[in-house]
Image (cartoon, rainbow, N blue to C red; front, side, top):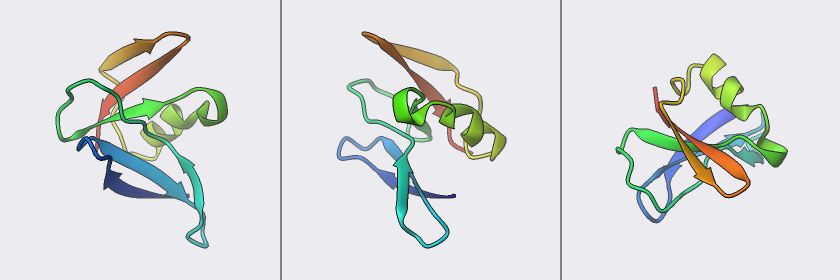
Length: 82
């Protein structure tokens, strides 16, 4: 998988993963109504994205999360982009 970096409408970082043919595979990030630094990203690590947090860390795309955002039944993770 190859990460494609972009920005959501609110300016937060977005990470989309594409396969070897350039087809979208998954979106690893989410936008949320919180203020985060420009070099940070919010990671969705539940449901179909379970395990992506660890994979992004191992791939040296993000640092280990420094903050958690509880959102009802799930937790989002804020990490610095590398």
